[in-house]
Length: 194
Image (cartoon, rainbow, N blue to C red; front, side, top):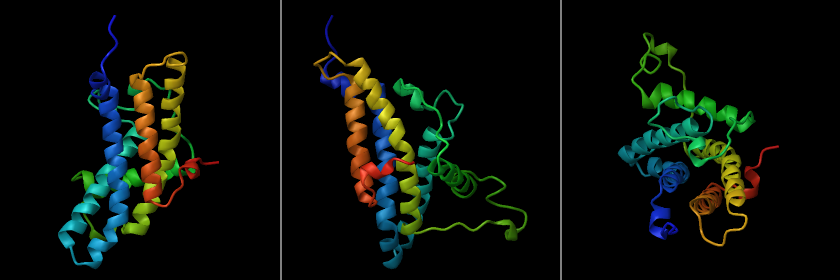
């Protein structure tokens, strides 16, 4: 039996899912880094676009990590072959709060977004400082997921010398997590919550 090619590995469904997670992690950290500059330089359209994109991507990560959707069209941790229980950490609880804000004010034209009385609108904080804090929450919750992917790769490949999809996925996700943690001033080892 022929081993899958490198090309087949990098284009596997698991790797395509990993690329989507990495894209969202990069978006929230890059926006957290650049948002205030856009505001300070009166780049209003750019800043508004960043605000919406930030909340879309934080909600995508929330859906993946702490509020899985029931749609068969959406992928989640189980699609990586790992056992995943939604964390009960402070960072995970804060992610649920971020999901609520994103769902009310950015992603849907629901009644909470346009209440009957304008006084019912709940304020929420925006700006690089707040985006960095939200990104740190997402990255902290992403850590145990990536640990699970790495553990699975080790179990599947204990004796293998070839690069498998699970090893490639684990390595790619870990490298990306380390990169984005540094971007928001969070050392990768600081993502572990006690």
